[in-house]
Image (cartoon, rainbow, N blue to C red; front, side, top):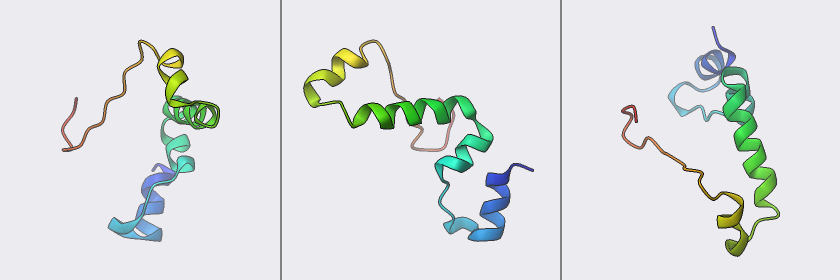
Length: 67
């Protein structure tokens, strides 16, 4: 059983908020991407964001269906 799932059951049920450590235990690739984005965000400005992430796309699943 993934630790993130267990944390949700044992630490808060539906109100449990997943952490980056939970994500790391389930999906190391996505964790690394978010960690890099977080590190980059400290150096990025509105002006150089486009240059740093040109060609990258970001998708969000807002309604729970697969993209």
